[in-house]
Length: 443
Image (tube, rainbow, N blue to C red):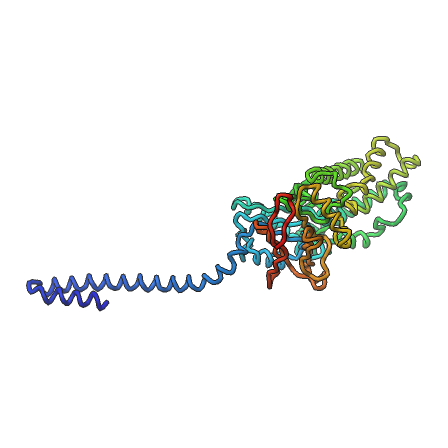
């Protein structure tokens, strides 16, 4: 302001012809101009200081904000830790909105069961699937064994609290009505019940109510072929190859490498559809009730087939054939122990055994690495084996169930840099480039 004050004084003292009024107007205008300039400089200074405080944080978080690919394994309803690790790698903000830009997020299954908030986890995944696509990124959500278990009614790991999260004001009324239907079904099937090898079905009201807590009916509806989660999960794949890396929940048994990756996905999808159709048919025939679990459905189908073949129950050749086909599900890829969502061989092999087997698998699919979960690593850290070709990323996120577990993510940069990311640190596991032979050169 002193600069403009001196100029004004010089102008006024050198120009004797200006009267006092004119001098006052000039002085006022120059004063207002000086004030505006001072305010602008003050604002700019504050803005620059604020920006300066943000720059260090931006420099630190920039590598995490838009990674090429992030993979996260078994969540098991641990919504809070899931959100924490997603924020850590820059895929979501505090409002749980997608901030990953064009990044690819691969989730390898087992979103459900054991933990307290499976619904919140599913809702977040569905939301991020949409948001990432709009931002030019993608969410690849693969099926784990627990997703398939829920779709097929294997509910051994669904807690009472999980069921309760599906309840509403009409739940108790639905539960009472369902129990009456069950009593009527038992009355209509004395021959079938007589052929049950074990007491798999509840025999009293108290036992039935215990097995079907509040929210059970709504849970089963949500995972049905027409249910909110059921429809979304039935569209997911089991295995995905991105660039030269294969991702899946359990693993590919070397004995199954004659099956191409797209054929694995198609087979599992067809098996789930076949299961849905068989359950619907047997429900229409009043052999099963829709609320029967997988274990109950298998036992009842077996008993019905025996009763019909003994001619203790009305016989129907078509129904017998459909029941017999339904009972072959133990051979299906989606439920076999050596299937892609159940296999644990990679963790059990010795190094000497695993190296050639892994190379056989990778060569069959023209891949350089395979990333799996399913088997919790006892160290609570992401582990690589067999020359870095296999990475195990299930670190037991649900620490209330897996002692010593913690949330983690695998980050893969386009320079073939594999980094394990935890809430408190980042650890580079592998760093190399792919040669013409398709094998990664470590350096």
